[in-house]
Amino acid sequence: KRPPIDVAVIYSIYARAQERGYTNKLHVRITGRLLNVRSGQRLGNFEVEMPEPANVAPDCGRNCVLEAVGQGAGALARDLGAVLARKLDVLVRR
Image (tube, rainbow, N blue to C red; front, side):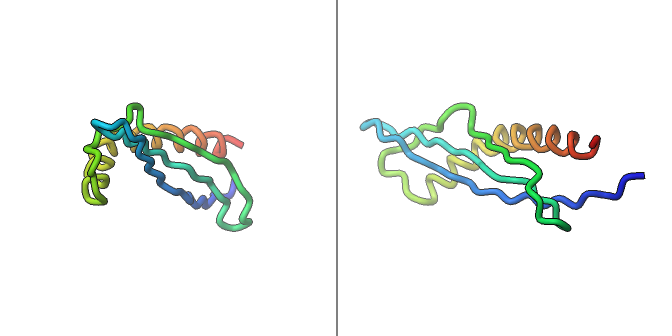
């Protein structure tokens, strides 16, 4: 019987606006890594991004950006969940 693997997920969320004059395209991505909690060993990396950039007003402030990110969070969360599930599945099968 294999011992359980305790895994920590460390991630960062990045948002970048691409100015288009009449609108800004907001690109959002999440990058991170999986670490074995006991040994500190890196178990894998991941990166996902919103399938389509969000359109935001040129004068979109912090709250506006957060709202736009929140609207795309569902798709981003599904993609991230799928990536993490595949990586964790490989780790469990080792």
